[in-house]
Image (cartoon, rainbow, N blue to C red; front, side, top):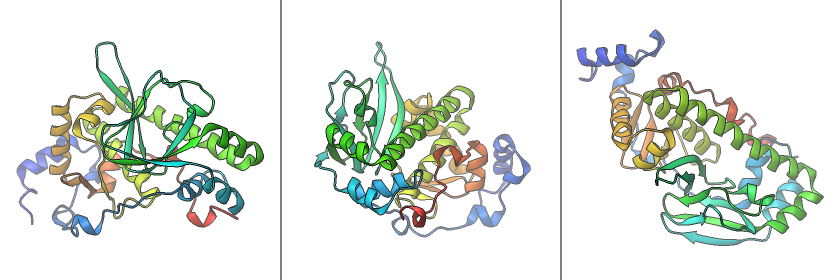
Length: 288
């Protein structure tokens, strides 16, 4: 039996576990996962993959997917911390994240940043540009990233001719709104352990949806400072909470790699119900 399952571990479990079913057996606590390298997938996403993702929430034909994948675009490589859009910028294009991750944020007059969204590979990062002339928030990379920049005029022409694509993009914005609602509940009504557990569960589901997570493991794109700005905590509080989740057996970390080692516990702690992400359609249903 592993050493962590001792008197102190029982006390911590009693303190944090919300229901009796969250108790871990000694076997679960001591289970050894394969090396991270066997779990983490890092691969670029193309426009076709984004179209397939969109089709999982709004059924599209293979012709719709092909048309989307053929949109005129230019690919841009971005350094860590680069801005795709700054608040107040005039805009003429929309961007799809092909590789990496970005945060969307606002900064107060006192210089305090609030992260309002995280976008992963395959996501539109600024679809609102399709209808609005200027940016009301900033979009910034959290590491090296690659984006496809598509003229607004090309997207408008495409959705005019293909109603299923128009509905798919509309649905995508509604899912973004659902994520934002969940984040508001998270930051406004949950404690530190729940906030971070919820965020880690959400990211796992979103990465798995684009085949960038396996066996509940993925590369964590955000720094602890960025996590703090997303969940309304200090960096020190985030660090302590991550350590606590590790001691409880919920997660395992190695540098930027994150493994959720007890999904049921993390799901319960974070009050995570992934229905708001609308990931309920299989790839086989993507096109007809």
